[in-house]
Length: 107
View 1: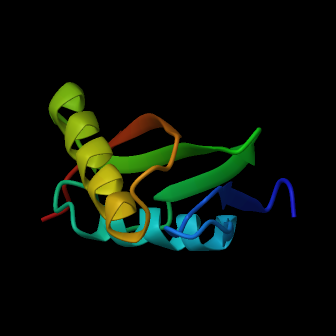
View 2: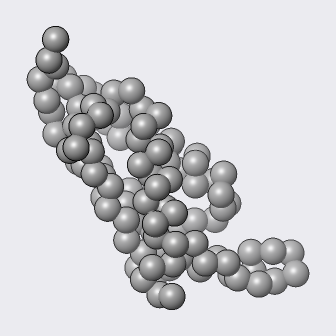
View 3: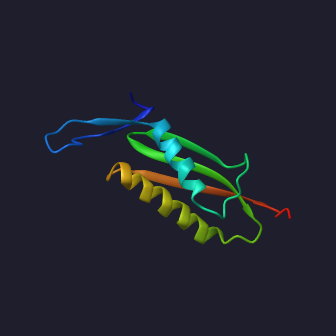
């Protein structure tokens, strides 16, 4: 299971482990990005998910309109993803890297 699953030890009160697939985390991030209106909905939106040493890593490339405040949007992306992660598991070690591509607004 290493590499494809994040293992949460002692997930229940009586012990036991649970493994969550990287595909679940991939879907969570993609759906989180759909909640953020500043991100343009085109094929440039990309989420890469990797699990290394039982830690979740995201690399996100998002298309945004020119003039977007990257710092504010990065915080919004991180908050949204982490909030959604907390809905499925309280203790997921995560690292999120965001890269933006500015696009002209077509009217």
